Image (cartoon, rainbow, N blue to C red):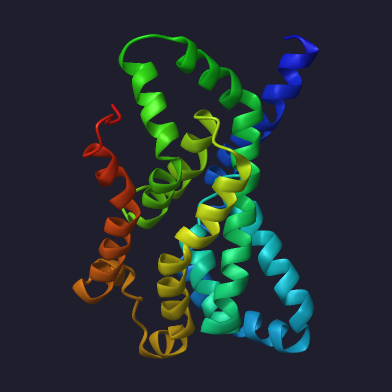
Length: 237
């Protein structure tokens, strides 16, 4: 492998290696059960070292997202459990956005620029699809973040492969994940009562009508520019 190719693909290789190691060794530790068993120790450490707890938590969240480790949902719940809805939601947003940006940059530097150039230079349906996405980048990026069914990893990597500008990715990520992050942080903030009752939190709350309805409304708003372009004289592919 050439020096230039190694520099491009090295970060992706590290992410893949750490992700595999994480799945093998950490999947039993980054769980709701582990959080429940260690809740008293976590609260005691937070009370004794609040600032350090924030730093460790945010860095841990960044690592989970950047290396695609299991436990992102548990990390969000932990942020709410340790720090409450506020400032817990801020810490969760900071960790998730930073981690997503790191994996986006690694994928874009390694593959995105060259893949996007090949798509643009190509002909037929793929080239038209690329142009269509480029003309609606803001809407597509917001939709990928707002639709609960889109996996977080996919929403991090696909924009990189399409050579989306970094600032657009960061803005749409930071704003687009607010609804889901706020919901799960709120669930985490109420885990004290859940632990006391010996039950598990309802993580399907995001699909409840009173929650899903407003999110779908935001999706419709994000999709509006695409719909309007469809009725122009020069509709996109």
